[in-house]
Amino acid sequence: MKETVKPIRKLTGEIAIPGDKSISHRSVMLAGLADRPVRISNFLAAADCLSTVACMRALGVKIDRPGENELIVLGKGLYGLSEPDEVLDAGNSGTTIRLLSGILAGQPFFSVLSGDGSLRRRPMARVIAPLAKMGCRIYGREQSRYAPLAIVPADGIHGIDYTMPVASAQVKSALLFAGMFADGPTRITEPYVSRDHSERMLQTFGAKVTRSGLTVKLSPVQELSAPAVIDVPGDISSAAFWLVAATIIPGSSLRLTNVGINPTRTGIIDILRRMGADIEITARRQAGEEPVADLVVSAAELVGTTIEGEIIPRLIDEIPVLALAALFAKGRTVISGAEELRVKETDRLRAITSELAKMGARIEETADGLVIDGPQTLTAAACHSHDDHRMAMALAIAGLAAGGVEIEDAGCVAISYPRFFAQIAALQEAAGGTE
Ligand code: S3P
Image (cartoon, helix red, strand yellow):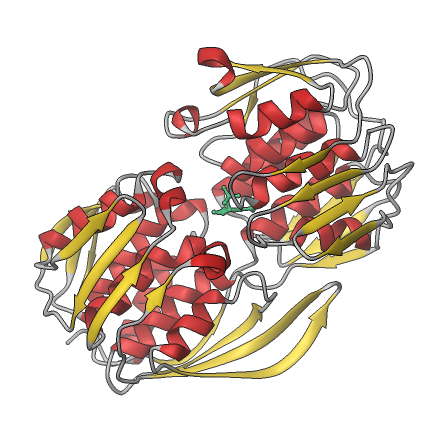
């Protein structure tokens, strides 16, 4: 599907941010292993999370969907899943395949996990190797580097003390989920703290998880006691597109409601503010274990900055749109330590550099990041999403802020933000048509 985005005069009004993708996945998985029904509200009904729903159903969990963004999950208990008849299809979703691999590694039955072409090229040794150390029997294609993954019952699962070579919430979560079924505590040390939604949600379900510095420890779990309701906060990674858009489009002022502001996710706010953005955090509240707020963002002049080290995992999915902000900022922005972007839905460092170049941007691609000198002027162009939802949305914001853009294969926004282009149309209408 091709989408054409016209430039917009300014962005004003209010946007209700759709549910958090990471939290939506985790809510269905843990609710499926719990002992009583859980109602999940503001669930992200996007392709990735629906892949998780389909996999959990294939494992015997009954999931009703009484409303577009509402699920009732009838958990089978920690030991109640059943052997699937078919290959479990994780679609495009790295979170589905990696987190489920941890759960399935603890089951007394055979299962196979696979996904689309992009997912089958993404690295899986990072979960297979530590799971094997725990005693799990999990194998993949090409010497256990890629999906499909085949999982057979283990003789016993042992808690390990594992230091992760990369900061990855998906790997950490897979090991924590397998660790529920282990005979002793699991300790995981990260190079930098990655998103901690699994830790928080495990606590909500009564599991004993503690953190000390960069190490998290989970004690084996006997049963998960479900909360009656999980209210999923809005996804800051989706809000990020509007944070950047309203900052770089003069005269804009937007209120983004119900945004999760878990500190392991707010790197985008920290960096944009450091660059000079005007972002106010209001109406702070709690949704279960997760902090939530409304964000009010107004247009501002930006300056370049350095993005590296511990903040990288706190904004890993926002780098495509941050690169766009850097093009509008005065001075140099240097992003380093972001080599993980090469193994996302596409090689995002390459895709950012090559697609924004079509709009006239000069971005230097390094092995682990980007160097961007701004401000630069972008012009209308035809670009390609690389079948990557966050690339499609970053390009759309570039088109809104500059001369417009035509995006080939833009349907992939359905992975995390199905109403993204409808939202743009509503903003165009509110602004009195296009420029
Ligand atoms: C996610 C973790 C991150 C992130 C992805 C979602 C999660 O991946 O990029 O979009 O839900 O745990 P990595 O763990 O591979 O860094």
